[in-house]
Image (cartoon, rainbow, N blue to C red; front, side, top):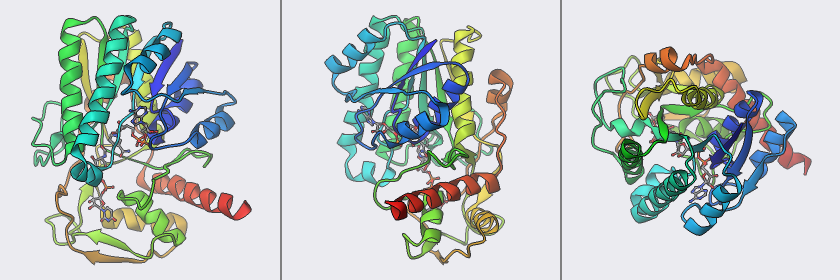
Length: 342
Ligand code: NAD
Ligand code: WQD
């Protein structure tokens, strides 16, 4: 069975392709490489022994997108990862985010409709919950006000798919990721932030390797067990496996509604200081960090209730924070070694 993955050259898309191939799916990717290169797909080939074709197409171009679907009309489903995802950039360039993330989505849906593609999985985000204080977050928790244009594109993307699914036969699943981190255990693929990263784990590994001089812990006087913010860090290969299961679930037609939502988190909150300690323990590196002011817009604490994904998809996140950090560190070291060997 063939699957079309959009954004397959990116971080979560590439890890998901590995899991799909390991579970017997054939995969084609569409990625304009606006925020990536083919490097991760080369890593996917080394891991799986399978070459994955990428169509270098901007999904905002309907004609080019249509041509890809026309050539791959035998697909059982689409997993739609392609999007811009940097929160501060979305604040500075809101139109870029609305244009890219929503035009690409509606173009994909137009093709899904025309070619009668039965199944669709969409990358959503815990950022749709906004500044919620009802913890842990269940799928029915009311969506709060989006804290950035990026988050708003995810809320709007979800609504577009829900409205579409009401009047079309495509079954769809919206997966709300919490904080995806780590890399494939082979260290052949991982996160490749462009420029200076904003997310905690790449900041930790880049500080440890010397690319960043010092990490600042954003806020240390919150009402949490050690004063720093709490997040639900979830291993990227566990996230990847949830996509394979979501697709299989749709294929098996267990989906009674046309559009269902699942949280993808471990269910455990980890503080920033605990994440740093876990990294120091597995790497043996003493991290250069300081306690600093809060980051505007940050939620103090958020973590998932993942009961629904466990019971409906049979999904079980298997990886703890230390193993997540270990793979992220091995990936960072492998990137340095590649530079040194060239
Ligand atoms: P990524 O930037 O590594 O991958 C996204 C890929 O989409 C990139 O390769 C980019 O080139 C491609 N792309 C963007 N716009 C495109 C377009 N118009 N046409 C074709 N390709 C396009 O990001 P990621 O971390 O792998 O995220 C994948 C998805 O998951 C995104 O939708 C993101 O919003 C969502 N998500 C990510 C996180 C996270 O922390 N990484 C958390 C929640 C949700
Ligand atoms: C995690 C924690 C920071 C960097 C973002 C997006 C969200 C989703 C996931 C896509 C926070 C702290 C961070 C640093 C720090 N992405 N931190 N020093 O903000 O939870 O979520 O990524 O959908 O939409 O907003 O993730 O990794 O940036 O931060 O102390 O240098 O680490 O304050 O508590 P966040 P993050």
